[in-house]
Image 1 (cartoon, chains in turn red, purple):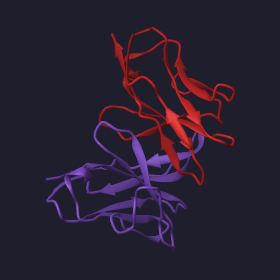
Image 2 (tube, chains in turn yellow, red):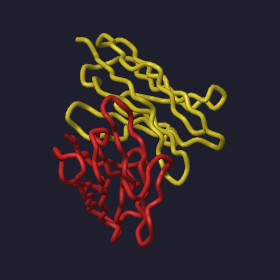
Image 3 (cartoon, helix red, strand yellow):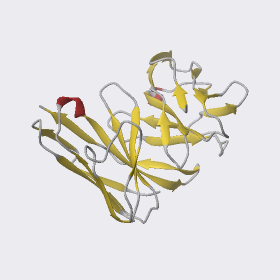
Image 4 (cartoon, one colour):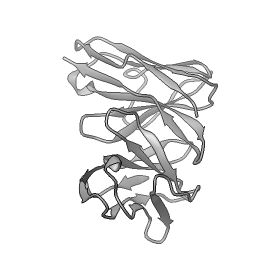
Length: 108
Length: 117
């Protein structure tokens, strides 16, 4: 079954500290993975996708097929990074399966 | 990227009634999707809205409960029928989209917050 696991519900980090959000997936084919972010009172928006291999707002995520992981990282957290983060998997025909999400709180 | 207008933004409904949610996109899109986000939970795909044919429902969702229309390439509706308090959720429309800087992805509407009393 196609599944996305985000183990930690709430993550609190100090400003300037590194942040890593874990995402593991279960998928039989070649996965297409995304990270979405939802800031307070805003709609869900795409942060990055693994194919683009870009750094967006200082965040990066590397697909590790051996570990079936797509962890999101940022070396120095900023207050504006406080948000809800969702890892998502295209489970076929452009249908997304989402993880349960991580609430990130950056402490000034 | 596409701009999605979703209406209503919120509603409080009596149990046993139905609510129709509208999703309007500012450009023609091939694929439109409807998701549900129950309180404290993640997003779950309800169905894919297909233009010119019946929607394709995910396991656990049925047409009688969540009828969907897709009359053209810019518009879709989701109806939540015979509502019960368990239907209280945020319902979101999504489209496949090209998002500058990151390539293909999926754009989401702002959601409809439904409370059933």
